[in-house]
Amino acid sequence: MKKIFASILTLCLLCGTTALATEYGSASNNPETVLTTTLNESYTVVIPSTLNIAFNATSTNLPVQVTSLRLLPTGRALQVQVNQTSLKLVNEKNSSAKISYNIGGGEGTSARTHYFTATGTKNFNVTIAKSEWDKAAAGTYKESITFTVGIIDKNK
Amino acid sequence: MKKFLYILLAALCALLPTLALAQENTTLLTTVPDHHTITVVCGEHGKAVIDSKTYSGTFTVQAARLGTLTIKAQPDKGYGFSQIKVSDLDGVTVRGRSVTLSGIHCENTVTLTFYKLPAGNAGSSAVNPKPDTTPESDPGESTSTNTETQTESGKSTLEDAEAQPESSKSTLADTVTLPEASPTENVLSDEYIGTEGGLEQLSIVFDGEDQQQDYELLSIKAENEEQKNTVLVRAYPDENGEADQRSLVLSTVQLVKLVQKQETEQLIFESGEIAVKVDLADLLGGDVQKLIGLIAKSSEEISAETLDRDWSLVQTEVLTAAELALVRTEIRIIPVELEDGSIAYDISVWLHWDDQELEISSMVPSLRVSLYVDDDSSDQYVVGVQAEDTEGFLLLDSTHALLQETMSEDQPDEAEKFIVTMPEEEEDTPVTAYDADASLSKERHSAVTAAYAGRGLYQLLNVE
Image (cartoon, rainbow over all chains, first blue to last red):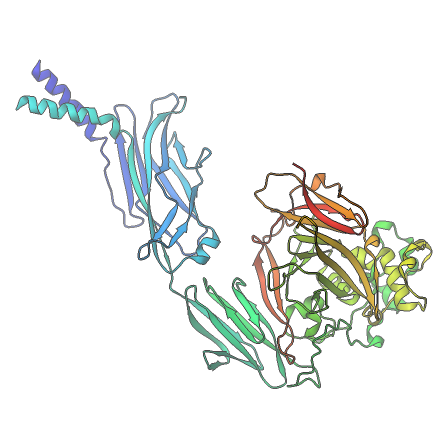
């Protein structure tokens, strides 16, 4: 019995390791790949680890690429959602200097979610108003935004 | 040991569901430069002075981000400073011959142009600081009474005008030949309102004491048939921020040039929170055209009673540019503080000639009054008018104009924009800061618009 229990737990653990995020590198855009696999559903999502926004650009695409996707047949979808963002780029040398931005281009009222039922690329938009650029002090600005990626049942 | 291993495995299994929802981060990164290149193109017959250094021709300077750069235009003897053309007007101010770029936030190209002062003015202070909209045209050259020329060009004569349907009747803009004005190296003068009167002719906005005022002018070209080619003139409030009377005064020749050269159809005069719109066809055609003919040609005394006559019996005179130059049109906006402290506006349109003036508001059917409201307001407003000697406001039919955009989103995004600064010293003339493709995004207002309903005080009324 103990052996059976240990085998079951070990099997679970082996399956579970595939659910851990795995990172890949690329010389072009430093993509960061999240590979998540559950028992019968799997996906591979590529999101850039860094998005360089050109000075004075009022709209910049933030691509989300799904390179592989296997879903159960009914009502399932891969959800990629932007969350945990202050919507302020902060000056590295002067934290009181900020540039307000917005993220959109997705679905739903907040436009910050994309759903995938097949492989492909969808873009979020990072927008910065001209008036924000015009008043921004010199320097490098950064902000980290967080994505939540997972398979959901769209019927629920 | 085995127990410990089981517990560890069980704990890892318990964590598995949370790992199915993965979280990843992306770093947004941007760099704002600490300097911007300002290219200065100094035209012929003048120099540019920056920090006591004198430059000529084309050169560049590096300006600190959000800093200030002052360029002093230094015309050669016999020449005047006419215009600064920039690729971005934001933060550009002109005081006399000094151009200041403040809050510098982008690369910019600044072109300074100089013009030859009229004979007798070279290097002197011959410019009359008082507005003079009378062009010095040669009546012999500017006449449009040559019937043969009109016929050849398809322009209407009096007989033609009567034979035409109402909708296609000509206006003065169709029948007057403008004199060729000497170039002043100033786009506003050369392409819009200059009619041989020199740069001082750019003085078109005045206060209640006929003092010339700085202003902005936007030329917005229609993109479809439903829109109108529009010239918007924006007056500024007093230096203390208070609204005062502002008048837009253009000679009839200047109006004709706007139509002929720019195909302008609509004029908007904005002062603070109010804008007055009028079609140029009304100011140059119909009964107003006949009235201008009477003023220019007839020896009879013109008064308010003149307006009561049967205009269908009055002939449409063929006029010369020189005759038209004698008659000026004024759109007048006077803010009036009411007992409750709110502001209402007295709106009127006038003709001026010699030392006389005559109100013609009732002869301008296209006259519209627009009062601005907050873009975010969800309240309902109408335009109300309080006639003289009456109490309370008459609510005007502005139902379909609620929150109507003065310049709606479907209009063009860019326009030619001029900021005209009046001279501080007698020897100078107005200077124009010019942007050929200025963004209109900041110019749009939500406004409530109503047709003019006679002389009175116009106010925005909340009818919630």
